[in-house]
Amino acid sequence: MQKLSFSFLVGCLLLSTGIIAQPDRWQQKIKYTINVNMNVATNQFNGTEKIDYFNQSPDTLTKVFMHLYWNAFQPNSSMDVRSRELGKTKLADPRRNNDGLDWDARVKDRISKLKPDEIGYQNVKSVLINGVAQKLIEHETILEIVLTKPILPKSKITMDVAFEAQVPVQIRRSGRDNAEGIRYSMAQWYPKVVEYDYQGWHANPYIAREFYGVWGDFDVNITIDKKYLVTAGGDLLNANEIGFGYEAKGVQVKPATGNTLTWKWQANNVHDFMWAADPNYKLITRTIPGGPLLKIVYKQVDSLENRWQKMADTCALIYPIIAKTFGAYPYKTYTFVQGGDGGMEYPMATLIKSASIGTAVHEWMHSWYQMILGSNESLYAWMDEGFTDYSSTRAMAMLRNSPGFWYNGSYGGYYRLARSGYEEPASTHADHFNTNFASTSSAYSKGAVFMEQLGYIVGADTRDKILHAYFNTWKFKHPNPNDFIRIAEKISGLELDWYKEYWIYSTKTIDYAVGDIAMVDNKTSITIKRIGKMPMPIDVLVTYKDGTQEMHYMPLNLMYGAKPLETKTPTTVHAPWKWTHPDYSFTTSRAVGEIKSIEIDPSQRLADINKTNNKLVIPE
Image (cartoon, rainbow, N blue to C red):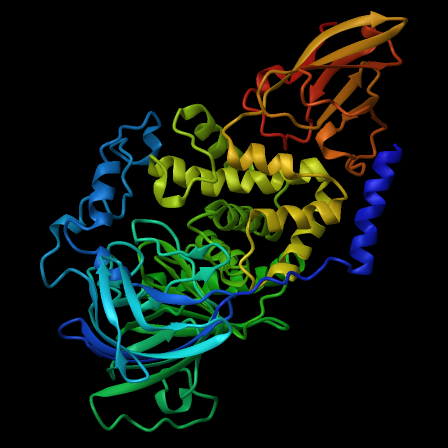
């Protein structure tokens, strides 16, 4: 009990005194000024970028890398070949796809069939620094810029980039003419500087998964046919000149004199910029007291109007829950945009295929764990998708006042993964999993279980304090897994590196069982067996035939402490269970004949892969 009290008091002290040190980690900074002129007849555009790049690292840089994402949408590209190769795998779980194969269902073999006017490309014609052309080496979706003069530490350069692009037919995330008829879903559309951080350059080819970017400011001017409504992840600077519902109340917008309009957008302190355009888009808004202005942009279809209105209302209702539980959204606006191929998040906006409330909330929650915290999704997809899946599911359950095991879907997904034979460590680079199934399940399901199971280890209330401290400490700083664990340790007062090592860096599973029961010195001795290879702290509920109950809690010795009590049920905190020992025995003061049942983990938060041996009911 002394250890329990000590760890609890340490956590309270850390919270009340605010002594969590702010991280002092350098990161690069960037400013883009982008001008593009879209030809809606050819689906091509020319563009220029003025890029101010601030090297805030201690390193001298002799080259710079850029992403050219749309070059993936060409026959025989790495994305094309990889998708077709993974699609050959026959999975034991046919729920993945109708044919039971391991396709990325949205890609399949579609890229290989693209015609010249359907492919995507981004062609950088020149990069100038101080008027001097730089050497360019194209590696499909990565452009290497060999600098004539290195970028010194703590210095800035300005690059002038000229490029041309063709919008690919909608296949994955971005493109034109998607299934719902949206003309342009403009994601990953500009030459984007690769992130350079304490681990070096992250010049990942575009194969399938997510992204990582440099924090910066964007000024983006988009010239396009005047019939098109443009929306974006940012703020429109010339709304009163543009109209389309963006103008201030009472403003009379002058008709365009030519065939095009130039939309001037701005987004600050973000790591990407997405926009979309369609001549039949409709804009509606919702105002949230104390929160952002929500904008919902969708293709006008009368039969779907009520669904979009309901989605808008629900998102406005759920924001106070999200802000209270996970932290306040820091930008002035957020936009839900119909487009893309399902749901894909970007700073200040998301592409969603339809007015699905669940998808909308999930994509919005990415703002917290990817757009504001900004972990490297390629390396730590579980920190983005998993934390987002956990938080969006929890927020929806709170909105609906849904009792019960609301996170059952995440646990079920993890169990299928663990039993499938396809599981790889969640620390595997997102593009290097052997199957799409393992990649997706590790990121979403196992990542979400990580967070709920953390509540089992440190206590749910403590876990929630950890979430707030993590968000407030690491927003806009690209945290890694150890950064999260250190926050969790400081708040809980417990050692937790073992949890990260087992759950993220291995595929070892949890399996505990009720073992032998015997009378010893007029007391009942109960043995719990660790069958799986991953050790955990254990809660055991003993229920007596007279209806009374008692909880027995065995902390894990690797924790060097114990969680606060979470139940009003009388609880005995036993000596720590050594991780090297497969069995643990404890005693109760009452006789065996008085016991009705013995249950491991009555809260059901322990991701035990075989729960059939977790509860013993003693016959009358």
